[in-house]
Amino acid sequence: MTAVEFPGGAGSDGLPAALWDSRRLAAVRATGLLDSDPEQAFDDLGELAASVTGCGRAFITLVDDRRSFWMSCVGVDVATVAERQCPVEDSFCYYLVGLEGEPFVVEDAAADPRTRDHPAVVPMKIGAWAGYPIIAQGGEVLGSMCVIDESPRVWSPAELATLSTLARAVSNEINLRESLEATRRALRTSTDLARSLQDSLLPPALRPVPGLEAAASYLPAAGGTTVVGDFYDLFRTKGPWWSTVMGDVCGKGTEAAKVTALARYTLRAEANQHLSPAAVLHHLNAALLDQRQGERFVTAAYATFRTTPTGIAGRLCTAGHPPALIRRADGRVQEVGLRGSLLGVFPDILLADTRFRLGAGDTLLLYTDGATEARAPRTDGSADRPQFGAEGLAAALSGCHGLTAAGVIDRLGDVLAGYSQGWASDDTALLALRVPPGTPT
Image 1: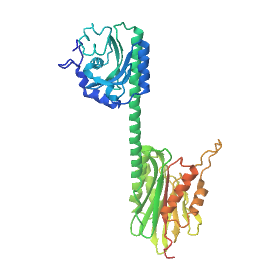
Image 2: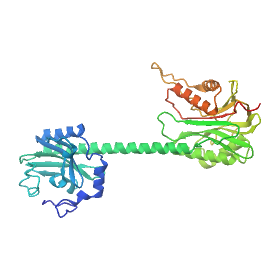
Image 3: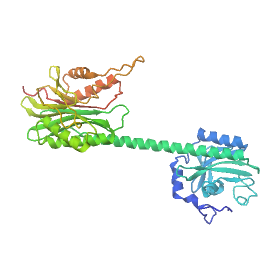
Image 4: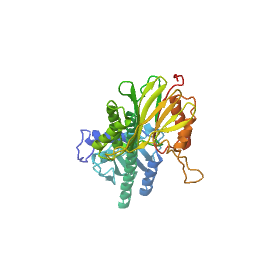
């Protein structure tokens, strides 16, 4: 069939062995363009090739192991995908595949010893043919950008240079699409992994405490996919005692996740050894300094409590963290906790426990600063975006009359979303403990 010597050899039918190279075929399939509908981007380049060379026909093709699929076919009247292709042996495009990226140019197809016996010369009226390869990112030959003249002709250097440039443009278009899709897939995967990792740092469901309602939520920042350091937990320690914590690690990403995991598991371990929240946080500070060497700081509000006949009694310690809020059954809201030192920065820190009690209908709220630092959207071109603030959060909590712990969390989430109009600038975690109103007093 051909007198061309292909670097990779040829089969008994004269077709180049490179046609069946598995890597090349995988690259062709990866374009996602086989059997695709015509696209203006490729038709424009085909029209330009035909115009520059004065040829009646121009093709942009993908070549697999059995056909030459025409992504663009200028000068050929076809209506369906099935018509926009021909068997691979009936096309000159396989020359480019076999020549492994070299152009293939013929000035008189009927006389050239390389093509004179080719079965397509007469039926396709090929007088002269010039083609340049379309190359994948990995160097595989995907197909060709080619033009056909019905009469023999001499191709000018300018025409061939233009065809070469147009073939590179097609290659770049295809490769950019693949890169974009790969980036999108990677982003989706990264987003899924980030959210899975974030979720793994939060308890899947708060453990029920007898005689107490508990609910929590994690509200991601708008558009956020990075793992952040907000975390919370609720667990039993020893005897009648329970512990709950709300924490925030400085920064985002994998390093923040490592610190979050260290903090969570250190707290659980130390909680079984010490009833004093301040003592537990002192040990967490030492662990952070030992393991992380002051690279990132942590803030936390940590409470130890037990149920009583009238509700719960406990102690709370805050380390660089916003104070907890208690909503009394009558709607009054008060802050609980003395703001102590950050954790993980200095060996000598100041922490103190504060006692608290919850009676029937009372609610304890722990939160991260994403709640108080939520910002309103800009209005009228103003740069001023006031924060929700501690007073705003206290007022919203005061308005949660008659709501369960889950209802309080839902209401606060709605209020914060409404204030920022759904565009939270920071991740926010909320945790509520409520003594049911039927508890004896």
